[in-house]
Image 1 (spheres, rainbow, N blue to C red):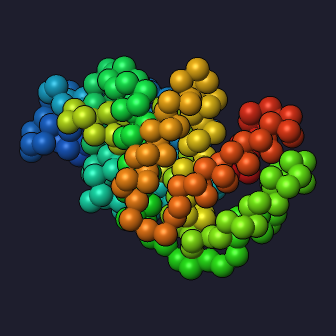
Image 2: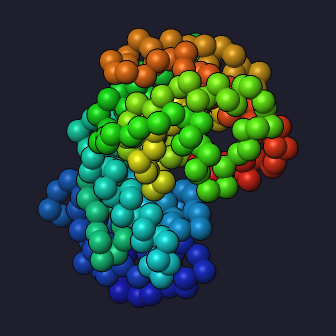
Length: 286
């Protein structure tokens, strides 16, 4: 990584190739945590429509890079959301340590989290332990998130969401959401993908990938996670959800009531099922 060249945009190396050599050398020093460095290696981890995620290693030390598409305006908006969210939660201990970012290169640099089992919490914990830790994480995230006042109820809010679900399909159950008040809005992850929860070397649950962060009703992440668990772990969902509710109720210090959040989560899950949409369409309004 010591010669300046620009590679094909068709693969992940193209995203790395647009970075100046000086930037790559600075990254290598950051990985090694010293003024001089050896050769730095990069490898692809995952890619999406807006960004590519890479691992970087130098002298046995690692960090995580996320490079957003330099030509896509929506990718820059995603970069801005993720950068702002990591800055908001930088000292919370709930997300990876935010090491650096570059507006010019649309790049985010994070501390490397965990080991080969870090992306599978159930390889580390039992279903009940995972549920408790996930509920506690969601409560702590809500507690430190920036928030704003919001009036109304969940039924009114969901009726105004573009592309939202038709709650009339589930009759009186949908109407019950009118009895659940909004307790303000908070910065939410907006991403219910369970593979974006990692286990640190110290045994802490860490949430990553914040490019969909947005102001949503407080409890939004809890509701989305309820659906994600049923879809990802259908055979174990009952135990995980029971303990997630217990963990959230135990750690939450605000006005959110776990029974009300569970009502919202179950109602929306039923509405999605009644709509009969493919899972991609069901989640498009999140």
